[in-house]
Amino acid sequence: MDADVILDRRRLKRRLNFWRLTAALAVMALIAVGVGKYYSHGETHIARLTISGFITEDVERGEAIDKLVKRKDVQAVIVRVNSPGGTTAGSEQIYHALRRVAAAKPVVAVIGTIGTSGGYIVAIAADHIVAMETSLTGSIGVLFQTAEFTGLMDKLGIKPFSLKSSPLKGQPSPVEPITEEVRQALQLLLEDSYDWFAGLVRERRKFDAAALRRATDGRVFSGRQAVKLRLVDALGGERAARRWLKDSHGISMELPITDVRWGEDAGLVSRTLDTVGGKLFKNERLTLDGLLSVWQP
Image (cartoon, rainbow, N blue to C red; front, side):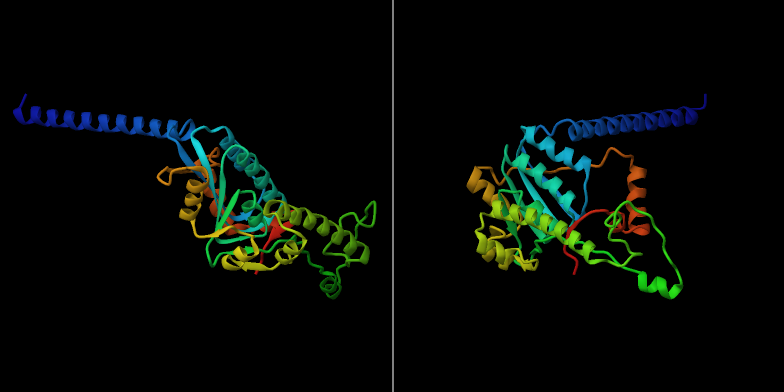
């Protein structure tokens, strides 16, 4: 064979060997990352749970929080809250899950830009709450909103028809006037949920009746105001939270932090389409059916 051909074959063989080795190393790295991610962190660390945006019920999130209880490599949990709230049931789900964690290890909450209403329900599940000076918090209460279109329907000549087993079934309805009976029933529902919310605040923040009234009139507070009202314990960010963990529980400030993840069972394409499609084509609040604990400026 020609000498040039032989040299070309040798160069081609070296290139193939290089790419085969590169591919093998890449596969091994992916396996190592996957094992480390899904089976064990190994190294002792602090877990960071981020609750942001509009809060709804989430089974996978609840399971991820519950796993923290028995994780021996997790020394403490930092809960980063940046949410105006959401459904009352969704916030309650996170609250109870975090209380189970707090029974086993320290939990500290850090309120970012906003931690109001249902976001504050999440925060009070922690043993210690830190907020920025300009953070917004509070808005302690429950909200029910609807709309009535009977006037518009009269103008359009539309007459709705419905059959129901009792006057309060399917009420309130946008196609029927809100009667005093319906209004009273909704008021009782709101008062019961508000009593539950205020009771959590009283229990977790150790408020007497006067302090509770000052803090639970529905308004929002800055971080500076919230400290004075004892809705939060200190001003600062995540570093202040870590300092509390060190001073109160002897947990080193040099300990690494690992984010708690959930919702990764679905495929990448499915998650991407859901995220993009959801933001483009639907308002999350339009899919809700229940009481809201949310601040809406």
